[in-house]
Length: 203
Image (cartoon, rainbow, N blue to C red; front, top):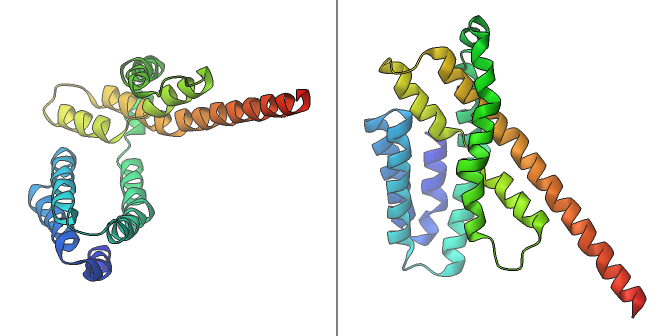
């Protein structure tokens, strides 16, 4: 509620469009409930925001978006990950250790199914280091995994241990892959800097 009041306050200077969009998201989330429905209503709110913000100046739009992102990543996203940790059923995975083998399999599947398609949007002429970093950054996934496994467990389509193995892979993907991607990017920047220095020395 405090976040919502803050958003309404900061968006007042740019008209009521953003406030209406965010408020609509809040109401739809309250009515719909659930992780998967929350994703849909969040997308609806994003569309509403784009519609109402289309008439605003670039500076005003960027000002509001910066504040909304600050609330999202500084307040709402941490709550999401805390909730994920609280609901994480580690005991079911310990009771069925054979499901641990699925964790690395799912991680490789994320690299193949989510990471490799990211290469389609890599700019032409990008280095291999940048391409590898793009694949790693594109391989992260957690919210959709939580939504799908929650539905699967509730409908008795998968057991809790299998769902926990999937969520474990998702959690590891958002922790490990970005770190590896940033490492790739730093090494690439270091190589480019070294090559530039060598070129300057030769000249």
